[in-house]
Length: 161
Ligand SMILES: [Fe+2]
Ligand SMILES: [Fe+2]
Image 1: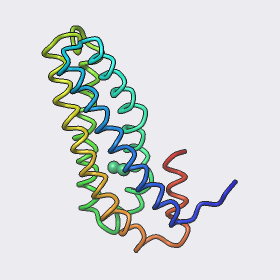
Image 2: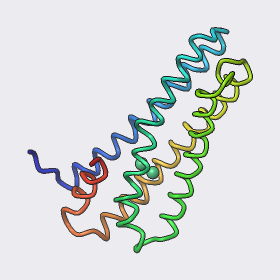
Image 3: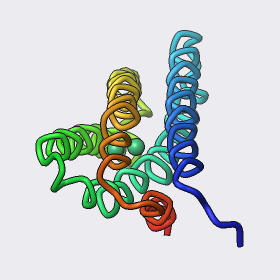
Image 4: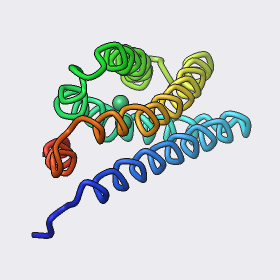
């Protein structure tokens, strides 16, 4: 198996963040388009697709970070880690509210439910983009400054284990 370097791990985290930001923005746009076209079936489909992405990608990403990168960086800057965990909580709260709308009845099956879902989806996308920016700009350099060589690569692998 290839050996991951710290630099490659940083690069992968940053590109994963960028990919997630654009995936979320695209999903929100598709949902908006379906709502604007007054196409309820398409809006429900887009909401369900976005929900699967939130649950299968965004939530495990946040949990993986808390187990690894955040745990490692806490001692060096507990306030930054508290803020990052607070933001995960804000994301999680909205993702749970979105889940309730996709699972509940009428939920996204109703006009109001679709509007509520779209509003939450916009908030999740905006929050996630700002959060990922802070991780790339403040958390990663903090880890680089404090972790021994090779540790970042280890953490990155553990994050996805
Ligand atoms: Fe995060
Ligand atoms: Fe992240």
